[in-house]
Every structure is written in C-alpha cells, then in structure tokens.
Length: 323
Ligand SMILES: O=C(O)CCC(=O)C(=O)O
Image 1: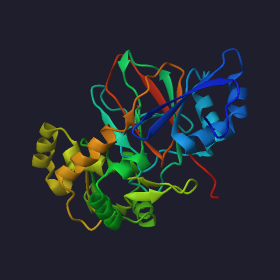
Image 2 (image 1 turned 180 degrees about the vertical axis):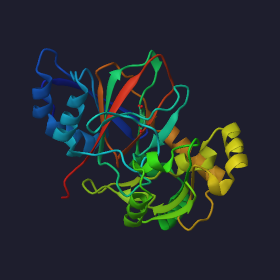
Image 3 (image 1 turned 120 degrees about the vertical axis):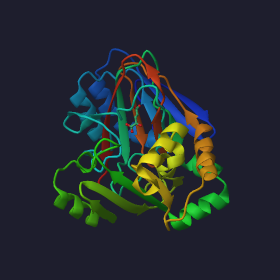
C-alpha cells in the first residue's frame, strides 16, 4: 500500500472523496524515538503520497520532544510570525494550537497561506484529548481544487486573493500580537520586505497583501487550492457577528476580509461553494491523548471541530531546506 513501508507498525488508510488519511500504530513495547528515526523516510513519503498521517500512541512524553521529532522529519522548526490567530508559546518553537472558544468550528485552512512565509509541514500533538469532539479534520487541497467549478478556479487563479486586515486593540489581534513586536519601524520593514501595504491611523494598522489562490507542490508537482479566502471573508462569520462587526468597523475596518487580487468582491455564493467543497472532502479522525498528526501543509488543509471538556493540542511547524 505504502511506497516506503513502515517498520514495526500497523497501518490503515481511510479515504473520502480524494482526502486520504493514514493511521499508523507503532507496535507496543519499542523505543518511540528509535521508531520515529527508523520510519522518518516512510513518514515523509506517506505525507507526499497521502498528505495526512496520524501516528496513534506516538509515545511522546514531553512537549520539547514534539519539536525534536518535527525537526527530524520536517526540517527546521519555525516561529509563529505574522499571526492571524491567538496561540501561546509552550516551549521553544512549540505552540498551543489556535485558542478559539471550544464551541466554535475552525474552518479548513492551509497554515499561513495569506503570508509569504508558510510552513511546509505542520505537526499536531494531542497532549490531552477532549471529552467529546475536538478533532483536527483534514481535507486534500488537490481534491478541493478538482471539485471546485472551473470558472471560479480560473478567476481565482488569474487574480489571486487580496487579504485585508485591520489590527486594533480589543477586536481581533493587535498589530503587536500579529507581528510579535512593539516596534512600528520593525513592522514597517517586515511589511515592505513581504509585499504588504500598510496604512496607520494612530495605533490602528490596516494592511493589504496579494497572494496566490492556487499553487503547485514543489516536490509532487500537484496543483492545489491554497488560500484562506473563505476564512478571511466576512461571509465566513456567523450572521450576528458579521452584522455587528460591519456596524462597528465598516467594511474597510474589519479585522479580516478577502477580495479577489484586483480588489473586486468575492461573492457570498462563491464563499459558500468553497466551504461546501471542503465540507464534502473533510475527514476527522478522533484524537486520543498521545496521538501525533502530521501533514504536508500544501497538500492538505486542517481545521478544528467544537469540543467539550479540557483539550490540549500543541503545534510545531517546519520548513525543509531549499532543494
Ligand atoms: O486545535 C486544532 O486542532 C487545530 C487548530 C488550528 O486550526 C490551528 O491552530 O491552526
């Protein structure tokens, strides 16, 4: 089944409309670090082939081990810069996953696709499984692209996506949190270096950045849907929140919004079409404490389901050396 077979493990493949998740269960009793080293190539290869791999009962005990295993398999671990959601540093370059209220769904997204610096791989470690729910679902980005209407894809491919943000204290992230700095000069130079247009109004910062909607995976050559238009767009918000925000901030001052790259509007129907295509291709494997989910961030998107009880999922993001 697998191009590079796993050693000392049972594997099982689940598939839904082009999204594939490999469940790998190492045989009990072995040294988990030695298992990861022996299977590093098989894990990388399974991510290229199937995009999502969940190691059940990974044996990880300490938070720092997540970074070490992520580095061994994925390359250099990254800081969470140019943030769009709240996360806390746990240790080194290991963070909590997005800290949104537990009754909320986090829509599918490729990590940091709005930024010029997105990770190649994302590793999620379940340090404490929720009482109910709280899965981290995955959806195949190439399958999403194939299922979207051709005319919609053409428009997005031609124009790209324009992401707009307004950073102000108390509504979404402040610019200090988004850019992890209190220094406006630093923010200005970061934005200039990354093709982000800035506009200050006292302590309120507005930014605009144009990014692609479709990319080609550098290793597999697969073309994929890779953007967060459906997540930034005002239509993604529940109606009451949307109406409230529009009344307080106006469209120009929304914490986040998305347009086509030429500034023309993306319609509500288009956003709902995209959300529907994701929904039909999303696989959610239940977490057990100790499981480790690893994904290729271009080939697969992730999200989060609502949950009850306490839950702790940690994240490490990595970047491969340039080929
Ligand atoms: O908590 C999770 O399972 C994932 C949350 C998420 O989407 C993220 O941190 O990017």
